[in-house]
Image: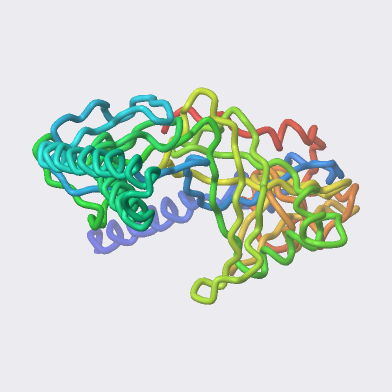
Length: 375
């Protein structure tokens, strides 16, 4: 009986202890959290210039192939790749020993024909022989002289000269190689790269959008009014001089559906050369355009959104239409208007309609590009 009473007493004590140990939830997790502060910016209008980018290939304004006019073995290569040369400067020499022998024989024929003419001329004057014989001898002399001149010209062609002022390109063949006028590949090229051409293309839609915005009654007038273009080099640095678009192909390429352009750049330092690559940037100026920082937007299913703040401090996602872009900014044509208040940063912390505490912040402090520290 005593044991049963003791057991009941212990059980009641444990029950009281367990009931007394339960604690009610306290602290911030139990209470409803209020709105959080977010940087907010007013949407401004600015006059800005954006750039459309197109791949380009570079060539010298003159890019002349050097070829042999006669067949023969190369005996001397008198220049090196990349060397600056003048028009008429000898680049290669070909073996002409056989031609020299032929020229000696042809010269002897000329001399013999001349002797015959000299012999017949006084006889005609004295009417000892007819003038027909003299004229026949003169024809033989002219024929012999032509044969000699042809051989002499071929000997001259053994000195292969530069067709233009410029810089020597890759030299494919060296001393001892046999060359011929029928060779498909040239010996080298000489390029004038004091100026260079940059070739690029636009698809038909981009071309029409671009050219229709340029002032001018016809394509010739429009080309004169085209803005200067920039060149981005292969190492992503900007070339120091702007270029001018000189020509636009009047036909659309049937295979690619694109229109080709040619811009010219001054190249006094010869930084640009044949075969260089890069990107052409064509500018477009927007007057009084709505702009938003890229960091103040997010993308979802191919559309771009900002969080617009209503007068009651509710932030709601609004889709915007982007007309152009430049470093750190989007140019907006639809979805918001000047003076709208939008969330500047921290969009990843928002979802749906959210009450916020707007903290108005200077636009430039949000729009300023973040410096790149690591590459």
